[in-house]
Image (cartoon, rainbow, N blue to C red; front, side, top):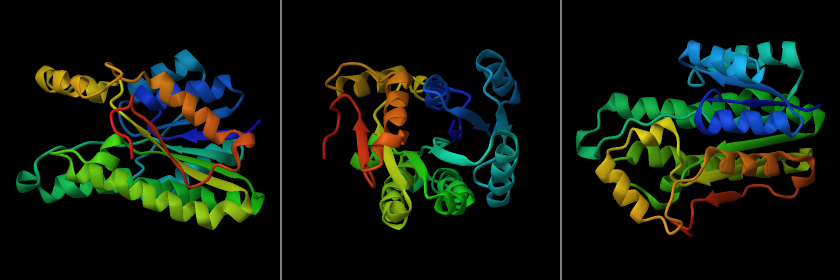
Length: 239
């Protein structure tokens, strides 16, 4: 039974992904950074163990992966799902808003991949899936920080795919469109109406629809899909 580690996994897309992987037969570890009460409720509901650390902290990632592996076994599947927004127009964006988003969204991906990549190379198997965003492909006003990180994850993943392919390691990005999560539900109603008007499917994605794509990409049988970006956005943006 392969071990899968999902970051930001106790709510939204991360929670749906952790549960989908569990249903597919993986031994799953769920990472969280905040809200230990939510993590406890998630574990009580799913029996998936939750491990707390901030993916922006390099040392904490290394220690967290070591804890997961000591309890569950070597991490063979990593899903980089943790991410934050600190939206503002660039002319009003603070240095703190810029750096925090880069540290979590982009730095967190590096920290987590760095913590598992050597083991994957030694075992000659690994599956890494990273959550991008439609806004990393299309851009979005008020999200220069967020869009920059999500676009950066694509370049990171393509490079990692080239490095890992000969060792049986795949690295791919899923770029969801607007999805029914707590983050999206916080959007102003007027703005949401405008967003929905721009989605040909006429609705938000369900977290389970994104999770299904993760299960597909991490499967042993998906080893020839590498360095790809899978858009799941209801035809909102096609490139």
